[in-house]
Length: 374
Image 1 (tube, rainbow, N blue to C red):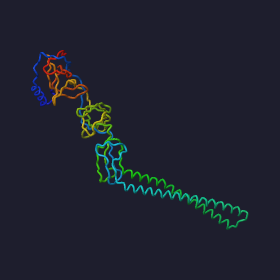
Image 2 (image 1 turned 45 degrees about the horizontal axis):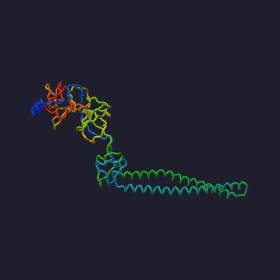
Image 3 (image 1 turned 90 degrees about the vertical axis):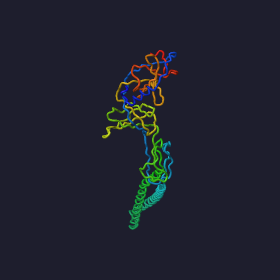
Image 4 (image 1 turned 45 degrees about the vertical axis):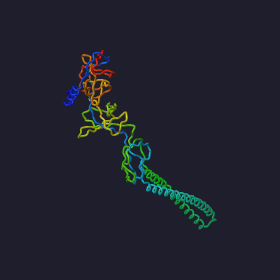
């Protein structure tokens, strides 16, 4: 087992063991304690890869209009809700445009009303002219009207019908412009609304790029909002590591470990690094941007493990209580590997076949004889 370490690490363990002077064996004291024989077992072989925690949803919020930033209402770290006002941009141009559009709409509506009245007037004139022409046609047929009177009535009818058609065309053209006018008003209102920049999601402000007085421009980010309810880990994994979507992995952040699942593996492999980006869904939130280690299972290997409850820690030193053939407990300095579940791998300081105390027993110390050790 010690061959896994550099000579300097092994020397340090031997030095610490030599410096540790056990208490004198007290034959008058014996304590009953559980014991466990250390054995070599097969554990998952893993490959550790660095990863970075990311929010699953990152929304860079950009300006849609140009103008001076008048107010910034959020700071980094603020929690925001969907629709919450984040940044205000000078809206004088937008208000002027909206006013012009509204004025144009009102003028058009007045013109449409006047044109509708003109149509009704022309229709009344056309109806009267048509009735007069029909009457003179009947009189002319009986010889009671002169040719001149008949021709005048027909001319007046033709003019009245032409005036009605002209009025109807004018009214129809104005009605056709109503949709265009409404679109202009809507566009102006939308443009004005873009002066108030609002959050598209619930989340946390993770970046702020502007202050009041700055110049906003379309497409230029103002703030970044991240969804604080769901996170993932992005890890660049060597192509030699077998990994597929759905695989279970262990994500370590400091002393905290969580079991997560691979969401997707990018199909393209980087031609230079010979690695691919792997996205891992986290079941519990971690700080966005933080560094983590991701353990990918690559197979199995033989290892010595002990219960995590058997390990004592003092500063940087880790140890267990080993029970010798004479039944006496002695501190054994060990070096630890990965912890999986309730057991921890021992890399050096302990061999298979040795006996240890698997749990901490109050009052049990080095030099005390352990009763019923097996």
